[in-house]
Length: 100
Image 1 (cartoon, rainbow, N blue to C red):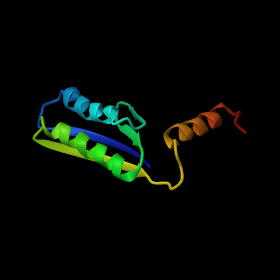
Image 2 (image 1 turned 120 degrees about the vertical axis):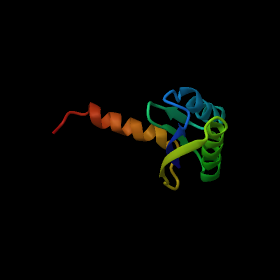
Image 3 (image 1 turned 60 degrees about the vertical axis):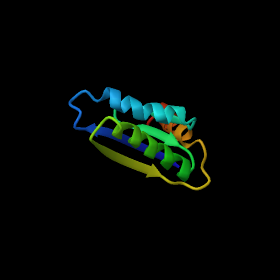
């Protein structure tokens, strides 16, 4: 499964990079395939391991923020491994192909 999630610390002012970095650090240290962009962190693995990482990331932010917002989107597809890479590779192949 792939999960894209965003953890937003609330009540800490406008500068949220340090609290968000705490969440991203948890994800990166998990050893699971992941990527982070300006809006979401994406992580891939089995349900229990991915959800555990999301919970620990939220908990890491909650240590320094009085309130935490979590947005989560999941792609649950049985029998598919390495979907984070294969989905992007497929998209890039289509982009490289001449339009009809």
